[in-house]
Amino acid sequence: MATPRVLIVDDNAINVELVRYILEQEGFAVDAAGDAHEALRRIDSFKPELILMDIQMPGMDGIELTQRLKADPRLQHIIVVAFTAYAMRGDEAKMRVAGCDGYLSKPINVSTFADSVRSMLPT
Picture 1 (spheres, one colour):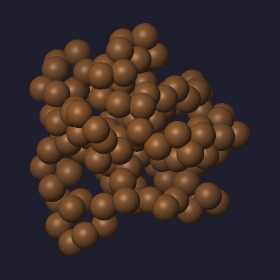
Picture 2 (cartoon, rainbow, N blue to C red):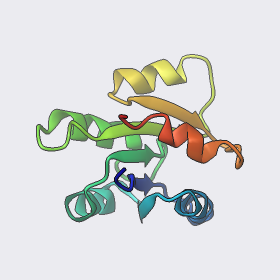
Picture 3 (cartoon, helix red, strand yellow):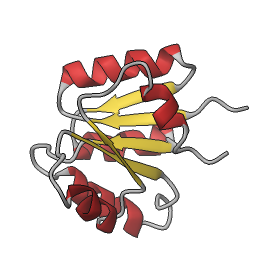
Picture 4 (spheres, rainbow, N blue to C red):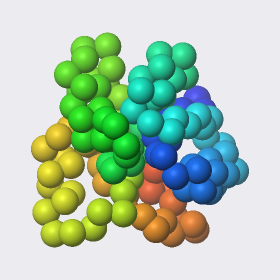
């Protein structure tokens, strides 16, 4: 089985390092971007299968970046998972309408997080 490739797009360095550590310990290849523009640059070189997308970021937010990815025929196959502290009623539905394929809320459960991410990848 190939190593799953995950790009973390999050402007919070502590979140990125925790998630990177957990996923790398579970055999994932991980890269990270601190904002949407950096994510666009990293997508071309890293070629992720799945993106953990923070929704609230400065500049272009995660919803706009997701919409751009899903509108691009070269990139629309990438699984985008909203990875956010937004947990209000209706937020998950808004993110799915924007093109997110899944939703994981922060704070994460460290013991189940890698399995949750793995479950969103194609088998």
